[in-house]
Image 1 (spheres, rainbow over the protein chains, first blue to last red):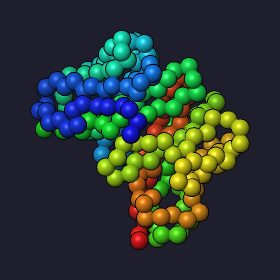
Image 2 (tube, chains in turn red, purple):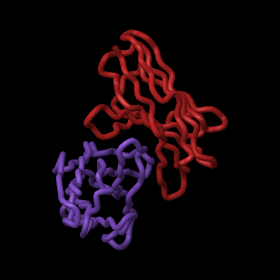
Image 3 (cartoon, one colour):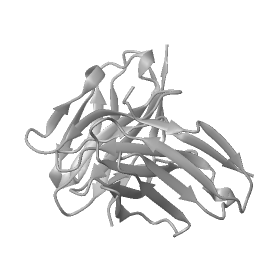
Length: 113
Length: 112
């Protein structure tokens, strides 16, 4: 167990809908990164939040957005869902400024039909 | 752009066999290198990491990896695998900004 929690565990949405995924970071960690892991692939970096601001983004369209709250928990929002958005969404927390090590949560399995 | 290449997508070994999983990366600057493991039904966890110093790093559960800068490689090894090592293994490279690029993974299946 890493102390990083994610909710919900599983989610089924239909194409065109919007979804919000949540992540609580490990105690003391101020940085949260989100990854998308499609079936049979490695995790792909979506974006990172540090002190409530986006701190880098991977190759994902603007309909993927996020938030980080003062307690360092985070949300990932995806608008206008597409079938290809079906994946495991992973959240990882870390402490920026230290030789970093990311701790991953169990993930949210999103299925878009 | 950074990228990570894992040579083997699926490896099947018998217990007590030796293991080597290949990983090559493309990045010209200072890199931090990782191997993560994902056991069936469990979350991704760190197996070992390299930041600097001795290029041979030892991780948990008897795993080790060697950083060869001239070959841009960071291969994972274990002299004698166990059935419990059945999992998916991901090589990853990170830069100073905490962003990690993962390979596509190698699914390891150990026969009892």
